Image (cartoon, rainbow, N blue to C red; front, side):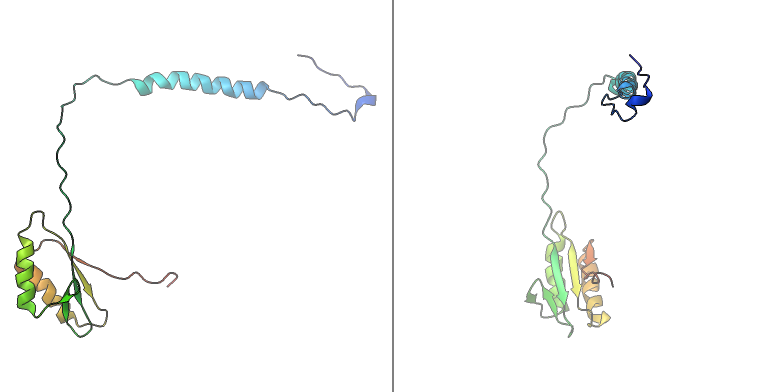
Length: 142
C-alpha cells in the first residue's frame, strides 16, 4: 500500500480509490462465524424413525346453519322449521353422524333471547357437542 503525502498544490485533487480493508475484515469475520456454526447445526443423532402407512384423511362434515329471525321463526339453512319438535328431530338425525357436524346459530340482533335459547336447548337435547354463534364484526373505526 502506498500513502500519498500531498503537497499544498494538490488540495483540490479527488481521490478515486476505494478503501476495501473494512469490507475484507467483515467478510473474514463472517466466514469464520459460518465455519464455526455450521458443524454445530448439522450435528444430529442417528435414529431409526418408525414407518407409517398413508391413512385416508377424514373429511370435515358440513356445518349446519340455523337462523332465527326477528319474529322468532327458526330456519334450517334456508328452509323454515315448523316448530321445536321438528328442529329436535332434525338435530337428532344429524347428531349420530361420525364425525358430528357443528351447529352454527345465526340469531337476529333484534330477536328475543328466548328464541335462540330454544335452539340451544334443542341442540343440547339432541346431543350436539359443537355449537357456535355467527356474528357480524363491527364496522372499521367503530
